[in-house]
Amino acid sequence: MTTRTRRETVHFRHPFRIKGIDRELASGAYEIITDEEMIEGLSFPCFRRVATMIMVPGAPPQRSAMEMISISSIDLSDAQRIDASAPRD
Image (cartoon, rainbow, N blue to C red):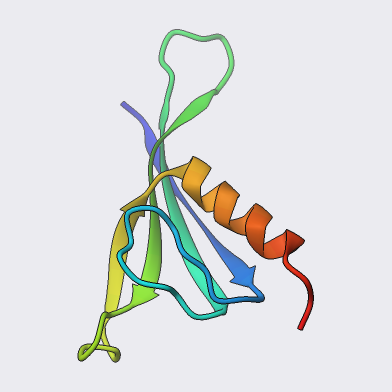
């Protein structure tokens, strides 16, 4: 099975929460890692998402460490939508 990993940076203007993470995250840039696998048997390349992770600073007292946390792509989209619709500071 062919797999690929995509990396992107998303920006949040306000502190935010994502389901599955037990703390509020600060505004700023966050790396999103998406693993996808190729759907076999098609006449063209097509991939499906199998995992989405976000890199966040470690929980206190380990703030200097980074954590990779598995999240739902829907929960990420919801957090981005809420951030975009929040009033600007």
